[in-house]
Image (cartoon, rainbow, N blue to C red; front, side, top):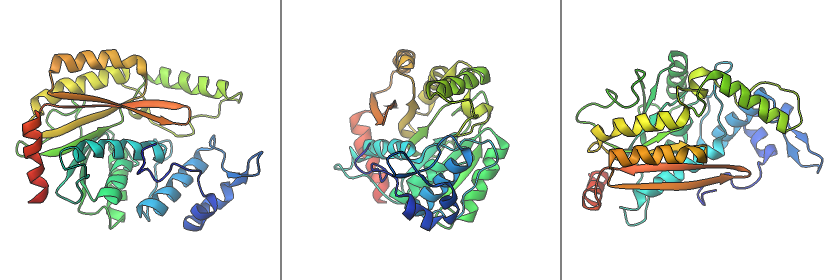
Length: 303
């Protein structure tokens, strides 16, 4: 994990349960007599997420509609920190902090986790796009219920099949985009993936422990097609965004994404490996600004 990630060690379930007492009923000893929860239980996972967000990121009020995506907090924190390093490169190695830094979360979801982490760690302002009305309403509720997020996070509708087109105002500038695209090509693929996971664990299928609605888990063509569309649309916004980035969960999708980048012809690209236990993924980032224009961009952070 990234060295600034707060979640590199084992969860301190006792401390987390003091923060959110509801977690205590899910905590139990594992075969080594260490505290854990049943990660196959969606209620336990959601309560753990709430405890992590409250303990480490100051979120007092957080909830999700039934069945909506409840992503692991440590992985999302890794994306935020590694993407933050891209901004630090043009700031003498120091990640810029405060509301002068604006970040676009493409697909904020009901969970609003990227803005929560980015606000707590760096004080950034966020715009989150969302195509699902229920998810957007939930994200707005989370923002409105927490003083740390109010007046710093805006949720905007995203109009499919467009991803970035029409989302930014002509005079807007964003320092960074974050995105965790749906990686399945269809709902059937998502269901099949869940079945394989439980089979590999030697357990009967119990549903999706991290939840997820159709648009959160699948998109036509899967994550490679989504990322390729995002890259193509980003070319028209190259002067308005310093660094675009997206997670790519499957290494087999990288060649297609790299081909899309080749067609868009950005000034620079990065592929950053992420690793959490046995799970491997990567961030693909790109910018249309050359080094001189990137160096000039930093002046916005000191105004």
